[in-house]
View 1 (cartoon, rainbow, N blue to C red):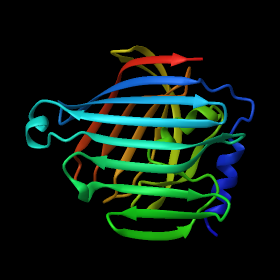
View 2: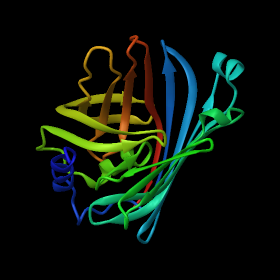
View 3: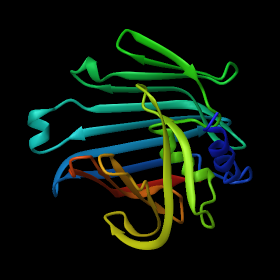
Length: 231
């Protein structure tokens, strides 16, 4: 099981005593080739040992004309000593059923069910696996200041992949939501692979900036525009 050492490394970074907030409302501007193409709003709520995450991306400008449907992702699960433990992930795009994907996490049987349209695939569920949405909020439960890298498994409802990030230096950013002291994470993609760069706030451990560069060199920029946190 080649992923097992990675899971041990990830769990070692978790802080059982970390007091994550009970609520987060975050908004991001989404840009492509320098043009704003979307507005993303995310909501995180904690109720005792349960959490709910919702992310809605609304197209704007030319993209709203070409592809007007909203993209909605939800993640629900438990909160334990090692952070978020997803139970269900859903991803939908208005007007395009072909883009729907879902994931069901059976932690008792250590089994992950991936659902795309009418097709179901069941695979082994590695400890510490996150979904595409919960992964961004799992950072709230991690201590990364003295770490050199971060490895974890993540699913988007279609497949399960291994992710590796090199942890770099602290950087100061200016966003519409204010100044952000951040920690830089880089997936260090190989040629022909998609690369993800994350600037993670050192204050609240939430992303204040993200750049995804695909294999063709096209970039999507996600930049924090508004943030409200409930302790």
